[in-house]
Length: 356
Ligand SMILES: [Zn+2]
Image (tube, rainbow, N blue to C red; front, side, top):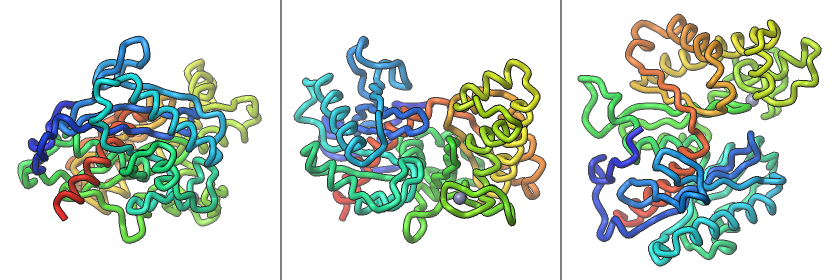
């Protein structure tokens, strides 16, 4: 991952005093009940934090995490507010240069208003005006809230992750790629000709809710037979529970069980991987992408047979040369990259305002 690609190298106009502006990015990683926070500067570098206070990440020691004890809106707002304050306190030298906060959340988000309309991941069933709330608690005027996978896609664009995946016929500076985030569910962030594709109301990319089975298990969205009921983390756990192992509660325990040779667990991972590969084949058949960055739950992606099955069915099911045209890249540092992406959304916002 190239994390030092400056803004102007991506064909975007440089801003005055670019190097002095910083933004804070926070990802709500609900699968592990944690918030991930990073500081990013406008030139496209992740800002290092004092060594003992941060985990090692793409930009060196630059990731700060915080546990979320509950996902109710009050707890999430106060958790984010406290993590923002911690990150600011860790770099007091930059304090007058912090420009805004970007937050990434799973679910249906209105990126323009910063309202979270529906988030099954956070169990938010009614709209939460998250950006408005955070503007008052953090005292930042610029707070951008975006769907987590869209934030990952904008981050990949901003930091130049997709720059090396370009074919001879692709126009420079207009990458066409998708980020697929695999957690309990499956989301897609799509960049077309260098621009994030949200659809008309921000729903674009809900690959996890692609209706693949006529009947089938009830999904978190309330419908039946969605792809994520057979391909995501929930599908793996359900298959193991159905075989009588109800003691397995986390995807990490399920992966350990599979590694220890448990046939049911192994089959659950392999079948889910096969289903994911079919979903990815559908994606390239529909969009003819150059690159898919597959990221998400490390316990699933680190289990090789899952990834092998996904690759195999992706290649077998894609139409004509669609799989050969597309690089499928696995990326395991999702929380941090989503936080980095959320921070870059602030610059995206700044650039759009600047150019208006
Ligand atoms: Zn669904």
